[in-house]
Image (cartoon, rainbow, N blue to C red; front, side, top):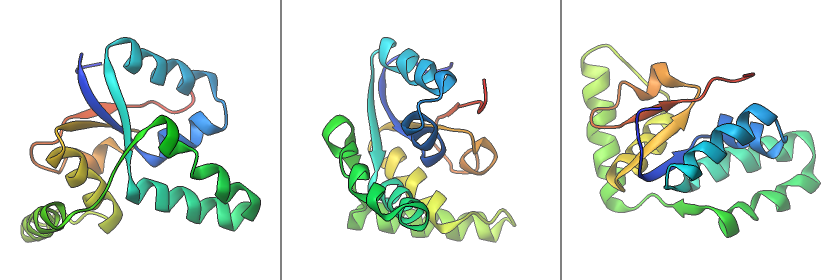
Length: 139
């Protein structure tokens, strides 16, 4: 793991595995916390989780709101929206498009001085100035 202290945004894949109680993910998140990382996520991740929960089991949507009690939830402000627009424009101009939700999550993290913990390293590494901590699913 390349970051020792600070804030880390847990991406949706990490949160899903954590909520499912997968031991490897619980250990991964525990290690981040042990290294002094402040655990956070973004409002976009909450959206993705609520959307997925609604499709699978509508009763689970309420459980997603409990994340804001244990994680800092970083929101999309005008500043992040402007920076995300610039970043996605840049990436498209060099032929490296990225999913709209990923750019929003990544730029919210970066603009709030956070790294991102994700299994989707390939996409998030494209965002300039964002530190990516790789989460290996299934380990």
